[in-house]
Length: 131
Image (tube, rainbow, N blue to C red; front, side, top):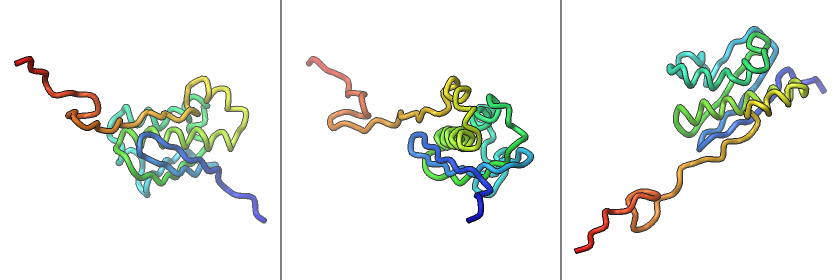
């Protein structure tokens, strides 16, 4: 059997799921068939996506191909970052300490809290009237 030519990683954040494929290359990042600059216009989201590559100093060592669905822009960028970190770990086990110290391997489990009966939102209650 042929050795695989990419390193897989799955990232999750809120309701977004990202399937990441990391392969040796020149640093191109393709998300859902488009360059990541077109999908993520805000610098904050771009920074989140690039963070695992930046802290491991491997920005121009790998090409990243991502399939992401679910959630919104923030959730998707967080999921992509998580997936890239996991794929980097598969590519090079020695990066675990750096990724762990920057909190990139931990899945952010925060999600939207459900609405409760009798309340307007998850915790916001209608105004109390005494009389």
